[in-house]
Length: 73
Image (tube, rainbow, N blue to C red; front, side, top):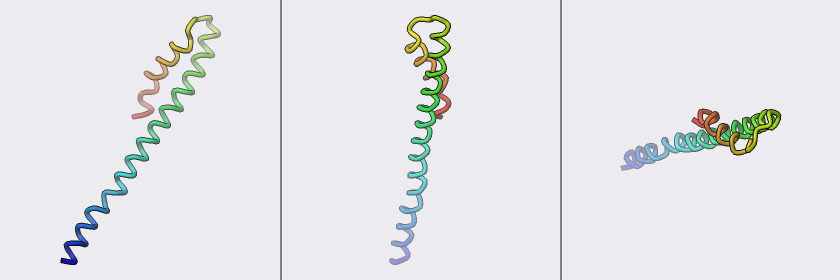
């Protein structure tokens, strides 16, 4: 009986670090994507405003989402 309880505890406890690790990885991916978007938008707006285009913020935000999609994967 003692062995059975020990085995059950090990089976329950072993996956816990893997679950915590995947949650950390998701957060890191989200942070990487947010940094990418922020950097891309800033650079894009600077270039866009210099070229005289209108509505730079919206255009750059849409482009940033597409360009930075892989950063969060």
